[in-house]
Image (cartoon, rainbow, N blue to C red):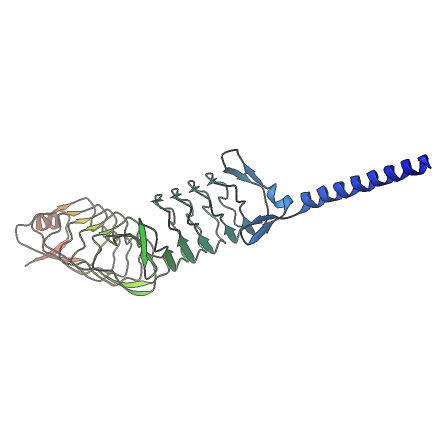
Length: 328
């Protein structure tokens, strides 16, 4: 009888051990929950994350990447040139995306920046040529230089209304007050009329918007920064208002269809190569008498005729560089 009781105890112990062992195995094989998505343990191992929540490398092969909740920062170049990736699910709680983190992900379609994210580094999504839509959350306060450069399919940028630093209108990115036009989607088509509040157009804001045909700005516009409209190859006409003061280098470079432009009396500076290779540019009226023009401002504008005031700095510039001009 004693032996029978002992046998029952042994069997019970073995059964309990088996149940615990199986339960542990199931837990090890179970999904890690990431928002509404799930992450297999084998997928989780592809993410190398330090104790501070920095994702410093990724070894996975999935086309659809779900980043674990514990990630607070995505390191530089972690997903750079991963042409196999088609979607990225960024976790709420992510604070920072470092420089070049997703650069060259040429098949990435959409970017949803969580409300927790504060900082996006320079060139972080550069040359992601298939991105069509970008959403920026309400905590974002810093956008690095050219972070969306070369996103040629981009058609719409949307910003959370609760964001106190940035805003969007008609798919275009501005600061909150819409004084600074930061970025126009490359896939914009036809005509664009900017809000009357715009005073400054940032560098590369319209870079290679090669479907844009016309752009118009109010008399509040004062500054066009370097490369702002570079490569807008179909743009024929642009209206810049009556208070423009500064035009940066290569501002309209390679706008090969631009036919005419009128620059106001308030203009004080035209940067180098501002109208480089504007081969269709003909009649150009520049009313300013006190204007600094840097070298090669009208380089390769073979058909240009400048209308300017007698005795103006522009007349002297045109004479020195063998540019045709007519005094007004």
